[in-house]
Length: 325
Image (cartoon, rainbow, N blue to C red):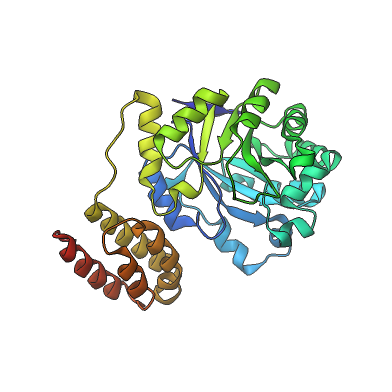
Protein backbone atom coordinates (compact mmCIF):
# COMPACT_ATOMS: atom_id res chain seq x y z
CA UNK A 1 0.00 0.00 0.00
CA UNK A 2 1.80 3.12 -1.24
CA UNK A 3 1.84 6.42 0.63
CA UNK A 4 2.46 9.90 -0.82
CA UNK A 5 4.01 12.59 1.40
CA UNK A 6 4.29 15.84 -0.52
CA UNK A 7 5.98 14.97 -3.82
CA UNK A 8 7.53 11.81 -2.36
CA UNK A 9 5.84 8.46 -3.03
CA UNK A 10 6.79 5.64 -0.67
CA UNK A 11 6.76 1.99 -1.76
CA UNK A 12 4.59 1.14 1.24
CA UNK A 13 3.04 2.86 4.26
CA UNK A 14 5.17 1.22 6.97
CA UNK A 15 7.58 3.70 8.55
CA UNK A 16 10.41 3.19 11.04
CA UNK A 17 10.08 5.60 13.96
CA UNK A 18 13.09 7.65 15.03
CA UNK A 19 14.49 6.15 18.25
CA UNK A 20 17.48 7.57 20.11
CA UNK A 21 20.19 4.94 20.50
CA UNK A 22 18.40 2.54 18.16
CA UNK A 23 17.84 3.87 14.62
CA UNK A 24 21.48 4.41 13.72
CA UNK A 25 22.79 3.55 10.27
CA UNK A 26 23.42 -0.19 10.85
CA UNK A 27 19.88 -0.76 12.14
CA UNK A 28 18.35 1.40 9.40
CA UNK A 29 20.16 -0.61 6.72
CA UNK A 30 18.72 -3.85 8.10
CA UNK A 31 15.22 -2.31 8.18
CA UNK A 32 15.63 -1.11 4.59
CA UNK A 33 16.57 -4.64 3.53
CA UNK A 34 13.31 -5.73 5.13
CA UNK A 35 11.39 -3.39 2.82
CA UNK A 36 10.61 -0.53 5.19
CA UNK A 37 8.82 2.28 3.30
CA UNK A 38 10.59 5.16 5.05
CA UNK A 39 13.52 5.30 7.47
CA UNK A 40 14.25 8.04 9.97
CA UNK A 41 17.44 9.08 11.72
CA UNK A 42 17.79 9.37 15.44
CA UNK A 43 16.65 12.82 16.54
CA UNK A 44 19.22 15.54 15.96
CA UNK A 45 19.51 18.86 17.78
CA UNK A 46 19.29 21.86 15.45
CA UNK A 47 21.56 23.78 17.84
CA UNK A 48 24.12 20.96 17.72
CA UNK A 49 24.26 21.30 13.91
CA UNK A 50 24.66 25.07 14.29
CA UNK A 51 27.58 24.65 16.70
CA UNK A 52 29.10 21.83 14.60
CA UNK A 53 28.95 19.26 17.40
CA UNK A 54 31.24 16.37 16.52
CA UNK A 55 28.75 13.61 17.48
CA UNK A 56 26.09 15.16 15.24
CA UNK A 57 28.08 14.31 12.13
CA UNK A 58 27.59 10.60 12.79
CA UNK A 59 23.86 11.04 13.44
CA UNK A 60 23.46 12.81 10.07
CA UNK A 61 25.42 10.22 8.04
CA UNK A 62 23.33 8.14 5.62
CA UNK A 63 23.98 5.84 2.67
CA UNK A 64 22.27 6.05 -0.69
CA UNK A 65 20.78 2.58 -0.30
CA UNK A 66 18.76 3.79 2.70
CA UNK A 67 16.63 6.18 0.69
CA UNK A 68 14.04 7.44 1.19
CA UNK A 69 15.17 8.64 4.60
CA UNK A 70 13.97 11.48 6.85
CA UNK A 71 16.07 13.47 9.26
CA UNK A 72 14.36 14.30 12.53
CA UNK A 73 15.30 17.65 14.05
CA UNK A 74 14.42 19.02 17.45
CA UNK A 75 14.63 22.54 18.82
CA UNK A 76 12.46 25.50 19.74
CA UNK A 77 13.93 28.42 17.78
CA UNK A 78 12.20 28.84 14.38
CA UNK A 79 15.17 30.60 12.81
CA UNK A 80 17.76 28.05 13.95
CA UNK A 81 15.62 25.03 12.99
CA UNK A 82 14.72 26.40 9.55
CA UNK A 83 18.30 27.52 8.80
CA UNK A 84 19.79 24.19 9.85
CA UNK A 85 17.14 22.30 7.88
CA UNK A 86 18.08 24.34 4.80
CA UNK A 87 21.74 23.55 5.40
CA UNK A 88 21.28 19.75 5.46
CA UNK A 89 18.16 19.22 3.34
CA UNK A 90 19.97 18.04 0.20
CA UNK A 91 21.12 14.91 2.05
CA UNK A 92 17.59 13.82 3.00
CA UNK A 93 14.19 13.19 1.44
CA UNK A 94 12.08 14.62 4.26
CA UNK A 95 12.53 17.01 7.18
CA UNK A 96 10.71 15.78 10.30
CA UNK A 97 10.26 17.87 13.43
CA UNK A 98 10.18 16.26 16.87
CA UNK A 99 7.38 17.52 19.09
CA UNK A 100 6.96 14.26 20.99
CA UNK A 101 10.18 13.49 22.89
CA UNK A 102 9.29 13.16 26.61
CA UNK A 103 12.85 13.15 28.04
CA UNK A 104 13.18 15.71 30.88
CA UNK A 105 16.39 17.25 29.50
CA UNK A 106 14.69 17.97 26.16
CA UNK A 107 11.37 19.07 27.67
CA UNK A 108 13.20 21.28 30.17
CA UNK A 109 14.66 23.23 27.25
CA UNK A 110 11.18 23.86 25.85
CA UNK A 111 11.77 21.32 23.06
CA UNK A 112 10.21 17.98 22.09
CA UNK A 113 6.78 17.43 23.63
CA UNK A 114 7.07 20.72 25.58
CA UNK A 115 6.16 22.46 22.32
CA UNK A 116 2.65 21.01 22.52
CA UNK A 117 2.01 23.54 25.29
CA UNK A 118 2.97 26.39 22.92
CA UNK A 119 0.76 26.26 19.81
CA UNK A 120 1.94 29.71 18.64
CA UNK A 121 5.55 28.57 18.78
CA UNK A 122 4.59 25.42 16.86
CA UNK A 123 3.06 27.62 14.17
CA UNK A 124 6.15 29.84 14.01
CA UNK A 125 8.51 26.85 13.69
CA UNK A 126 6.49 25.03 11.05
CA UNK A 127 5.76 28.18 9.02
CA UNK A 128 9.47 29.06 8.90
CA UNK A 129 10.39 25.53 7.85
CA UNK A 130 7.82 25.16 5.09
CA UNK A 131 8.71 28.60 3.75
CA UNK A 132 12.46 27.97 3.67
CA UNK A 133 13.02 24.33 2.73
CA UNK A 134 12.38 22.55 -0.57
CA UNK A 135 11.80 19.10 0.90
CA UNK A 136 8.46 17.99 2.42
CA UNK A 137 8.14 18.83 6.12
CA UNK A 138 6.50 16.42 8.55
CA UNK A 139 5.95 16.62 12.30
CA UNK A 140 5.63 13.96 15.00
CA UNK A 141 3.76 14.76 18.20
CA UNK A 142 1.80 13.14 21.00
CA UNK A 143 -1.81 13.03 22.16
CA UNK A 144 -1.03 16.01 24.39
CA UNK A 145 1.31 17.02 27.18
CA UNK A 146 -0.94 15.44 29.81
CA UNK A 147 -4.55 14.30 30.08
CA UNK A 148 -5.67 17.81 31.06
CA UNK A 149 -4.24 19.28 27.84
CA UNK A 150 -5.04 16.85 25.02
CA UNK A 151 -4.53 18.98 21.90
CA UNK A 152 -3.28 16.69 19.13
CA UNK A 153 -6.14 17.79 16.86
CA UNK A 154 -5.25 21.47 17.36
CA UNK A 155 -1.56 20.82 16.62
CA UNK A 156 -2.47 18.81 13.52
CA UNK A 157 -4.66 21.62 12.19
CA UNK A 158 -1.88 24.14 12.79
CA UNK A 159 0.56 21.86 10.94
CA UNK A 160 -1.79 21.52 7.98
CA UNK A 161 -2.40 25.28 7.83
CA UNK A 162 1.38 25.86 7.73
CA UNK A 163 1.80 23.58 4.73
CA UNK A 164 3.19 20.52 6.53
CA UNK A 165 2.98 17.45 4.27
CA UNK A 166 2.03 14.81 6.88
CA UNK A 167 1.75 14.30 10.64
CA UNK A 168 2.61 11.34 12.86
CA UNK A 169 0.61 10.95 16.07
CA UNK A 170 1.74 8.93 19.09
CA UNK A 171 -1.33 7.99 21.11
CA UNK A 172 0.24 8.74 24.51
CA UNK A 173 0.70 11.96 26.46
CA UNK A 174 4.12 13.21 27.48
CA UNK A 175 3.15 12.40 31.07
CA UNK A 176 2.76 8.72 30.12
CA UNK A 177 6.19 8.48 28.46
CA UNK A 178 5.86 4.90 27.07
CA UNK A 179 3.72 3.40 29.81
CA UNK A 180 0.10 2.30 29.70
CA UNK A 181 -1.82 1.78 26.50
CA UNK A 182 -1.68 4.06 23.46
CA UNK A 183 -4.96 5.85 22.74
CA UNK A 184 -5.66 5.11 19.09
CA UNK A 185 -8.89 7.09 19.18
CA UNK A 186 -6.90 10.34 19.19
CA UNK A 187 -5.30 9.19 15.92
CA UNK A 188 -8.81 8.72 14.49
CA UNK A 189 -9.78 12.23 15.66
CA UNK A 190 -6.72 13.75 13.98
CA UNK A 191 -7.42 11.82 10.77
CA UNK A 192 -10.97 13.17 10.71
CA UNK A 193 -9.76 16.74 11.35
CA UNK A 194 -7.17 17.14 8.55
CA UNK A 195 -6.77 16.24 4.90
CA UNK A 196 -3.01 15.61 4.90
CA UNK A 197 -1.72 12.05 5.54
CA UNK A 198 -1.85 10.92 9.16
CA UNK A 199 0.58 8.27 10.39
CA UNK A 200 -0.39 6.32 13.50
CA UNK A 201 2.15 5.42 16.17
CA UNK A 202 1.92 3.48 19.42
CA UNK A 203 1.69 -0.21 20.42
CA UNK A 204 2.42 -1.82 17.06
CA UNK A 205 4.16 -5.06 17.97
CA UNK A 206 2.62 -7.39 15.37
CA UNK A 207 1.32 -7.06 11.80
CA UNK A 208 -2.15 -7.62 13.22
CA UNK A 209 -1.73 -4.58 15.48
CA UNK A 210 -0.95 -2.45 12.43
CA UNK A 211 -3.98 -3.68 10.51
CA UNK A 212 -6.22 -3.06 13.50
CA UNK A 213 -4.85 0.48 13.87
CA UNK A 214 -5.57 1.25 10.21
CA UNK A 215 -9.08 -0.17 10.50
CA UNK A 216 -9.90 1.60 13.77
CA UNK A 217 -8.40 5.01 12.97
CA UNK A 218 -8.39 5.31 9.17
CA UNK A 219 -4.73 6.39 9.36
CA UNK A 220 -2.78 6.48 6.09
CA UNK A 221 0.38 4.87 7.42
CA UNK A 222 1.77 3.13 10.48
CA UNK A 223 4.94 4.01 12.36
CA UNK A 224 6.71 1.12 14.07
CA UNK A 225 8.89 1.97 17.08
CA UNK A 226 9.77 -0.34 20.01
CA UNK A 227 8.27 -3.35 18.24
CA UNK A 228 11.12 -3.23 15.69
CA UNK A 229 13.91 -3.44 18.28
CA UNK A 230 15.58 -6.80 17.73
CA UNK A 231 12.87 -7.53 15.17
CA UNK A 232 13.48 -5.82 11.80
CA UNK A 233 11.36 -8.57 10.21
CA UNK A 234 8.31 -6.85 11.72
CA UNK A 235 8.55 -4.18 9.00
CA UNK A 236 8.35 -6.54 6.02
CA UNK A 237 5.81 -8.78 7.75
CA UNK A 238 3.62 -5.74 8.47
CA UNK A 239 3.85 -4.31 4.94
CA UNK A 240 3.04 -7.74 3.48
CA UNK A 241 0.08 -8.28 5.82
CA UNK A 242 -1.38 -4.84 5.11
CA UNK A 243 -1.08 -5.50 1.37
CA UNK A 244 -2.22 -9.11 1.17
CA UNK A 245 -3.88 -10.10 4.46
CA UNK A 246 -1.40 -13.00 4.60
CA UNK A 247 1.00 -13.45 7.52
CA UNK A 248 4.61 -14.26 6.71
CA UNK A 249 6.23 -16.67 9.22
CA UNK A 250 8.26 -15.30 12.11
CA UNK A 251 12.03 -15.88 11.92
CA UNK A 252 13.38 -19.04 13.53
CA UNK A 253 16.26 -19.08 16.02
CA UNK A 254 18.83 -19.64 13.26
CA UNK A 255 17.60 -16.65 11.26
CA UNK A 256 17.58 -14.48 14.40
CA UNK A 257 21.20 -15.36 15.17
CA UNK A 258 22.28 -14.72 11.57
CA UNK A 259 20.61 -11.31 11.58
CA UNK A 260 22.21 -10.54 14.94
CA UNK A 261 25.66 -11.31 13.52
CA UNK A 262 24.98 -9.20 10.43
CA UNK A 263 23.92 -6.33 12.69
CA UNK A 264 27.10 -6.72 14.76
CA UNK A 265 29.29 -6.68 11.65
CA UNK A 266 27.65 -3.48 10.40
CA UNK A 267 27.94 -1.92 13.85
CA UNK A 268 31.65 -2.68 14.21
CA UNK A 269 32.33 -1.64 10.61
CA UNK A 270 30.90 1.79 11.38
CA UNK A 271 31.99 2.30 14.99
CA UNK A 272 34.97 0.01 15.52
CA UNK A 273 34.96 -3.31 17.37
CA UNK A 274 35.26 -1.96 20.89
CA UNK A 275 32.41 0.58 20.79
CA UNK A 276 30.39 -1.45 18.30
CA UNK A 277 30.31 -4.54 20.53
CA UNK A 278 29.36 -2.48 23.59
CA UNK A 279 26.47 -0.93 21.68
CA UNK A 280 25.37 -4.37 20.47
CA UNK A 281 24.63 -5.58 24.02
CA UNK A 282 21.21 -3.93 24.18
CA UNK A 283 20.41 -5.21 20.67
CA UNK A 284 21.42 -8.75 21.67
CA UNK A 285 18.95 -8.56 24.56
CA UNK A 286 16.18 -7.46 22.17
CA UNK A 287 16.97 -10.03 19.47
CA UNK A 288 17.12 -12.96 21.88
CA UNK A 289 14.12 -12.16 24.09
CA UNK A 290 11.89 -15.23 24.19
CA UNK A 291 14.43 -17.61 22.60
CA UNK A 292 15.33 -20.89 24.35
CA UNK A 293 18.15 -20.47 26.92
CA UNK A 294 18.12 -16.71 26.19
CA UNK A 295 18.75 -15.57 29.78
CA UNK A 296 22.14 -17.32 29.85
CA UNK A 297 22.95 -16.04 26.35
CA UNK A 298 22.24 -12.43 27.33
CA UNK A 299 24.27 -12.77 30.52
CA UNK A 300 27.29 -14.19 28.68
CA UNK A 301 27.01 -11.67 25.83
CA UNK A 302 27.78 -8.86 28.29
CA UNK A 303 31.34 -10.22 28.51
CA UNK A 304 31.85 -10.48 24.75
CA UNK A 305 34.20 -7.86 23.29
CA UNK A 306 34.79 -9.09 19.73
CA UNK A 307 32.89 -10.27 16.66
CA UNK A 308 34.70 -13.59 16.89
CA UNK A 309 33.61 -14.00 20.50
CA UNK A 310 29.98 -13.22 19.64
CA UNK A 311 29.98 -15.68 16.74
CA UNK A 312 31.37 -18.41 19.01
CA UNK A 313 28.75 -17.68 21.66
CA UNK A 314 25.91 -17.83 19.12
CA UNK A 315 27.25 -21.08 17.63
CA UNK A 316 27.27 -22.64 21.10
CA UNK A 317 23.74 -21.39 21.71
CA UNK A 318 22.46 -22.80 18.42
CA UNK A 319 24.05 -26.17 19.13
CA UNK A 320 21.92 -26.30 22.28
CA UNK A 321 18.91 -25.68 20.01
CA UNK A 322 20.03 -28.39 17.56
CA UNK A 323 20.95 -26.11 14.63
CA UNK A 324 24.08 -24.42 13.25
CA UNK A 325 24.85 -20.79 12.44
